[in-house]
Image (cartoon, rainbow, N blue to C red):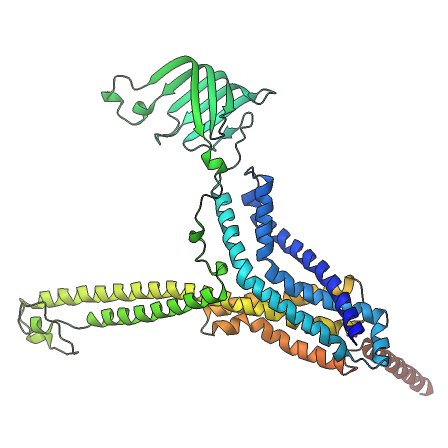
Length: 490
């Protein structure tokens, strides 16, 4: 039996490793498709892109593990069924249940590894990934001025180069608009020729302009030309220098990791549990405080109504008063106080609702991530008990049919997971129910397939349905012939 177990594990591990990296590659391509607009045109170095892909691939392993288990189990038992190895093992006294046992323990080990990966490694990688994505989003497009095109990469400046020479440094017909005064195109510099070079420290780009002119219409455009002797300033130059800062083009990794460690995906189980308890206590305390503050606005000044001008004494009991008996001098003050207290109570309720809603949304996000770590690991086991029975039933090896079945079940699982996550966020249902909804749906399918595969039931056998179709066809043919014979006799 040990030889059979080693053989089964060997047949399983090969497709598992292969499909794991294939699934990871597909998920990584989806990630790149999502962020392609932010990555293109930024002039990112190769090592930056490789680091980004490395951190992204680590964060996607939680989805690649169950997908690889499903496809590997389907391929393993499908290949064995196609080669009649399952029939041979059954004839030797080895049941489907015994064949599944070592691979079930192996799938359990993979689920544990996936959980530890999701709990310890993925949060650290998520911090690095979010830092890099934030840096890339903040980074400006790579410095590249094309001929005849206005370039807006520098703050408060617009540059247009008429022609660039072959050396990449000499430029002709240069036009620079200075918008630093925020008054439109009032300050313009024009040069017939020039050069643009990067400083040795690569922090600045230096423009050396030759044979040009300078216009400044700021005073005239601002409407103060009547008091200014020179509303239009114009000057010519034979040589001029302009320096532009490039720090925003290449600034990477200047952010502090602590800014991203509070996100739910960057926390382990222990940190998430601690954060959830803290948020629950904060919501509870704030609700009590808001309730007390709101009730304080519901009481009128008892002493004021009794013609007492002391506004500092507030009754602690609800009372009803007949305002018709109140003097006309005091009535406006009472109404004004009631109106101000009503507005204050309304503001207290709105502020409390917004604050509690904000904290509750954060609580849901942490709870969702907490249960996601368990649900994705549990999916490894559920997918094994779907793939292994189906592989032994359909008895089709290779990658074609198993891949189709894998896509169907994983799409079903993914769609139900998204629906469950929305239920966890926007309904009174418990968060754990929404996060484990996909597992609840797949569990009966696992039990059904495993039971019929291990008991050699004919319910899912292809031959059963083939014979059923043939019987239906023969019944129709027999009925047609009987009708024809009866019509002939008549």
